[in-house]
Length: 126
Image (cartoon, rainbow, N blue to C red; front, side):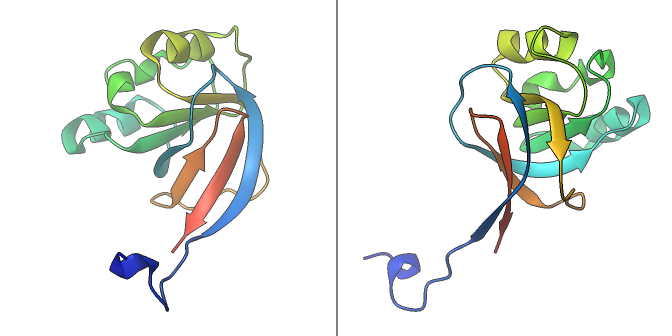
């Protein structure tokens, strides 16, 4: 038995915070929530790295993600459809995505989240 499985082990709390349309069928995808408003945010991530980031954007035509797209764990877009630019690029690069997302309780940047292939977005606490 692993120490994390024994008595007194902490099980992370998981809470659904939103949902939308998945861009393709993908498995549970964990990552770190990060709201990106424009090219300056992407430039910052080019310096620090985007691996493991779930990018949260408003614009489904967000071409500013191009330099870091392959590094992202996932992308959440509050606009668009699966036929919009972000949906197509997500499928082509096989980066899990949720579009037309409605976020009921937006977490702070740096919060651990999980996307799933049904379009559900969850916050992972602990």
